[in-house]
Length: 166
Image (cartoon, rainbow, N blue to C red; front, side):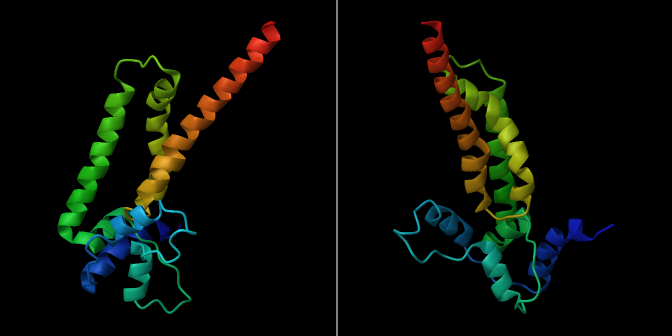
């Protein structure tokens, strides 16, 4: 067995034990700046993982894993852990309620209704091992991209079927 399953939790214990400084929202700033293409903004702010490595005095020969709660803790302290849990819980509650809601008529929104929950579940291991910056991958790679792929595929399939019927 490996102790890797505990390594993410060690980041939280290390941050608390060594009283690492808070960044007061650097993850949110990094998340927002990651939405801007790199050719428009060459220098991006450090994400919480880079902050952790920098203040933990990484010798350069060791990798670290930081978990979601530690990322929120390094941003806002104990209030950040609570806020991160509430935000993540509200996101999941919204998606579950959307999933079990009235079936949507438009195919794009029906695909969103069906694919959002599995998308969150598939990206959850990555979210657990990142700070708030991981929400970008959750939204784009876990939800929007699969919905767009199915939607465009459906449009293409419909046009092929329409042509073959003629």
